[in-house]
Image 1 (cartoon, rainbow, N blue to C red):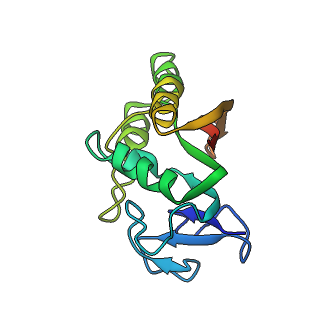
Image 2: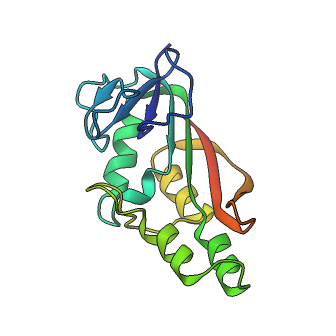
Length: 168
């Protein structure tokens, strides 16, 4: 069974060795250091599950469909995909309600910007991401309840959109 965590970096969410961590950076916790927008070494329909947390927002509006197409290409029929990213609709609600500062809003919107690839290029809400996945033949798409983690000061960190689906 082949399970890929894409963009897990130095803090992968999924347990190893069950999951293979692929990240653009060569870090101790990374199994394969390569870009994840193309997966040329991964055979078509060979992956059982793909997990990508805080990654899809790093691809621009002219890139993300190519990236998602590539990820779905390697998924087996019946394979699962799970994506986590900032939920822009919920983030805007927090900002308008005064729950987060402009600095924090900007950090979540535009990324940490502490290395070359850590820039956010696009905003997501459930409807947009669902549409993109449906076009690629992903079905049984579900949205988990928004997860909002807290900062040390008790203020909201970032509302997380969690979306899961299955390749036809």
